Amino acid sequence: MRDILLHLDSYPDPTPTQAIDQAVAFAALFDSRLSAMTVQALIRPPSNPLANALIGIAAMAAEEQAKSARCCKEMSAHFELKAKALGVFESLVVTQAELPFIGPQVAAYAKTRDACIVPIANDGDGQRGVAETVVFESGRPVILFRPGVADLPQQSLGTVVLAWDNSRTAARAMADALPLLQRAARVKILTVVNEKATATAGVGRDALRHLTLHGVKAEIEEVDSGGKSISVTLDAYLGSTPCDFLVMGAYGKSRVREFILGGATAHVLAKMKTPLFLVH
Image 1 (cartoon, rainbow, N blue to C red):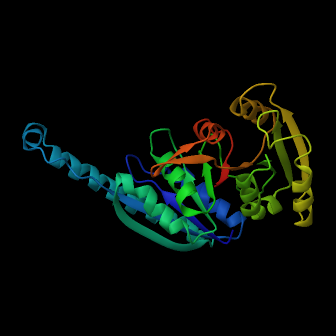
Image 2: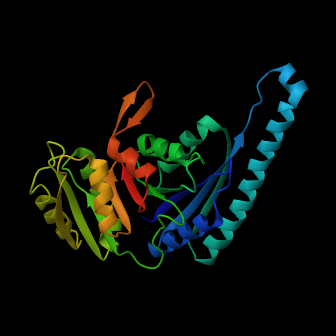
Image 3: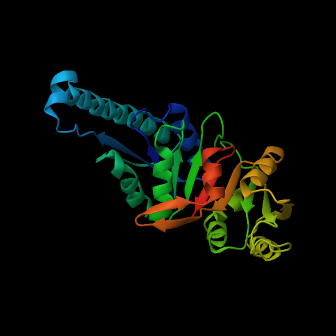
């Protein structure tokens, strides 16, 4: 992962400096070059003369837009300082877009990067929507983390769990995550059996063979769902098996131009316990 993009959220609240610092240190761990992208939110007030006269909605929109611009400037300065100090600075991209089009802009830039980091500071910051758009529209991996809850590894990479169900998206995730898996001290190939037809006992053996040829120290782990959902089973496993990353394929099906996330993907995004490496 020599070429990584970091998205910095400017509205309604800026990405915390703690998240920026973690992303920069993570890039240094991989000897990567890191570009930061921040998008100033363009907030168009509705054309409503009465509302504008009563509550000054146009002035409120202008104030919020100016706030987003200030956040972009402050985050960019902090990123550049930290990234140059650790020798990972590649570039800084500052653009503008209305809120619904921020995700597609980030996805467009992510297409020519090895991975895109999207920090999620809180449930209402809009970053989950950006991450989903990048996963499904860029064709590149997305790295998600939540500072203070699911922190990015900084100095070394311990255990990485590869969710393996022998599907196309799992195979794509394994291939795209090779730089991560090769750097890890240990890799667990996790298959939840009795949950879907493709995830049967022993299905991880050929994945183990493949990773071994790539110099990855891996072992197979199989967990019986016992009739429980994949979400509940993953929760229980991650609660008892500390790890630095969960690598998994992102499932989704199209509906017009939107995507509905599969149950496992939606759950790990909503209840993040460890940094995620998602690939579609």
